[in-house]
Length: 75
Image 1: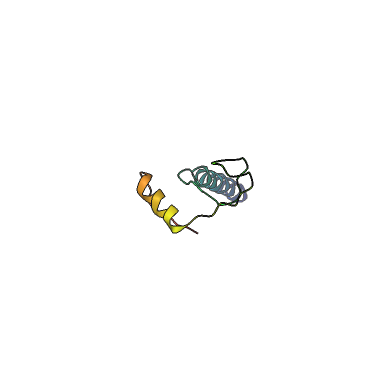
Image 2: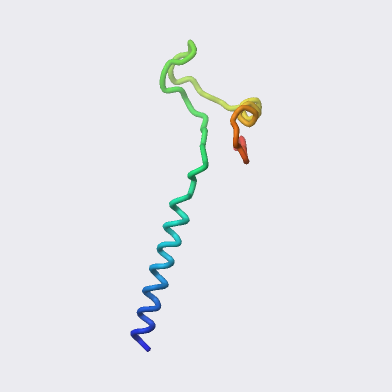
């Protein structure tokens, strides 16, 4: 009875470990994050370090011009 319990617990642990690995292996594979911040280089006539802010117009432009978007949030 003791040996069967140990074997059962080891099999349960190995199966649980594989399930967790499979879940996290696919975590975020279809996600792109775009975060506002500051420019690191000079671009478009502006100096480096200019603050970048997103507006609802940016969200609308991305949703209309990027194919395959299912969900989009400005938060």
